[in-house]
Image (cartoon, rainbow, N blue to C red; front, side, top):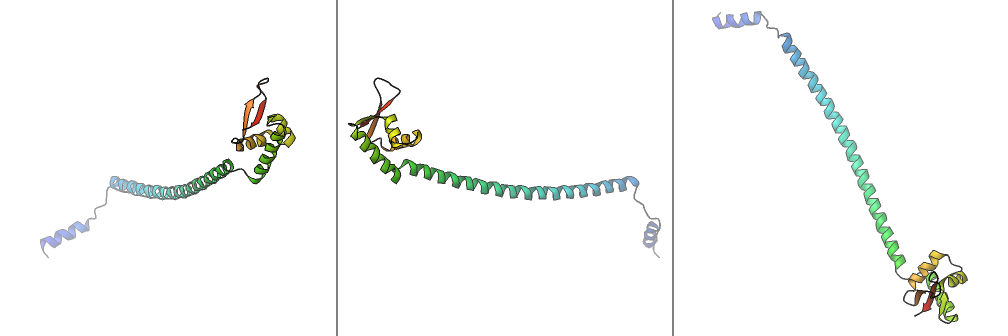
Amino acid sequence: MSIDTNLAESIYAFPVSPSASFLQALQSLQDEIIALKEERDQDRQELAALRLKLVSLEKDRDTLSENQLIQLRLINDLRGEPQPLQKDRAEILLALIIANGGKMLAKDARQKMRLDKSTFSRLLDTLKDDIESKPLHSDKRKMLLIIK
């Protein structure tokens, strides 16, 4: 046997045990690795939940946008041409005012047509090209409807 072989055998003959501090450091590193893996798994779950929430919020936003578009279209349709029932009411109102000499109090016309205030107001808005409304000279609270 050579000296190198004897030296190698003598080194292996006395096993070197790692020190206690080295083992503690190794154990703490392993614990930290396990904790980091758990945190990573939790982060992945949280990220997946946030992605699902984002998809849900985007869907809600799209639905709200569509609803707003529909509402705008409905509002524009209502502001546009008078509806068939409004056309009939408009003709009745014009005939009523003409029968009264071209002038009539708005309250009287509304009561004769049996309309509520808001419906009558919308009807007057559709007829703003044909009927003019002015405050009555003797009582400014009352509105006078005049054929243009």
